[in-house]
Each structure stands twice: as C-alpha cells, then as structure tokens.
Length: 136
Image (cartoon, rainbow, N blue to C red):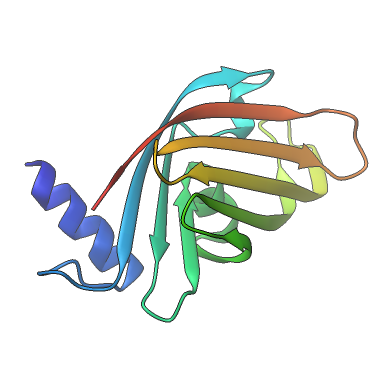
C-alpha cells in the first residue's frame, strides 16, 4: 500500500522512481508545529529532479497554487538543502487575503530532519514546524 502511495506521488510530480533513477523524493511529516498550525502543512513532499530543479508540494501549495511548485534552491550541499518560495494572494478561512506568504524550508540530509517556516508579508506573525522525512 505504501508503494502505491509513493508511485502516485511520483507520477503527480512527473518523475520516475523506478530502479536507481536520479530523481529523489522526500516524503516529510511535520509533527512539531509552533504558533499557527494552519499555515504549516503536516505533510510535505520534495522532489529533486535530475536537472537539479526542486519541486515542492503540500496542502497549502495545492490550495493556493493548485499544483506542485518549482521552488528556489538557496543551498544544496551534502549536508543541507535550503529552499524558498512565495505564495501570492493567500486567502484565510476568515476570507482575509494576504498578498504574499514567504516560505523557507531546511532539510538536514543526513538526519532527514526538516524545518519549515512561513511569514505573511506585511504582518508580524511567524509560523513554523519541524519533522522528519523519508527518502525514496
């Protein structure tokens, strides 16, 4: 059952995980959230494509962007992967529209620990979460 989920997720991202393919899939669970769970998704998927491009998907990205998002890589070493992206015109459950939400994700590759931070532009609020990823 778990393999079917990974295969479906990989197909959704448009990558092949068959054999020892070059694409990497990180299936991440955010279990330790701080200050405002609503803007940090409990599940995050990260795909590093063969060409080095990185695509991220989570519940917030899918709600706002309607599809996984190719994100900016700010650091990619043997130890750490750091990513950033901005979601535009984000609407809350109270119908409040925030012009932009900045996200920053850090993945410690050796321990597979992940941290995710969100900041709405123009507001003092900060949201964060931590967890662990499984790599495929």
